Image 1 (tube, rainbow, N blue to C red):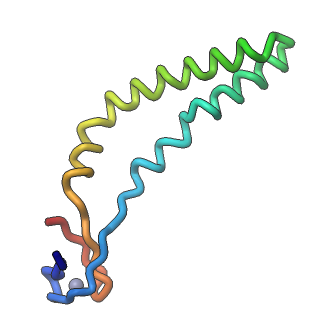
Image 2: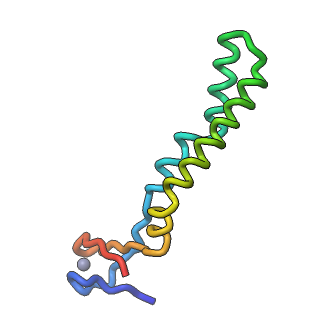
Image 3: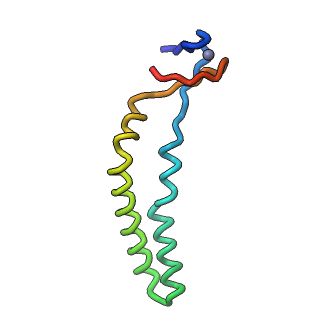
Length: 94
Ligand SMILES: [Zn+2]
């Protein structure tokens, strides 16, 4: 089904991809925190495996807390796609 711009009635409308989800994800990735844990343990001369496990566990806790906080707005974004008119740069949702 083709969308029509409500502002200029042009058919040159593309789906506007929301970048909110990808912006928050890399900040608390388990890989990143595990790596951080390893370097901290190397610095204090502790077994790096402990740091890796601790880092991964911390990442899991942060991600769970984030998911709980982020869920309502993210769900709203998912059910309401946004569109961008390439003729007049007008953004609208259905
Ligand atoms: Zn338009």
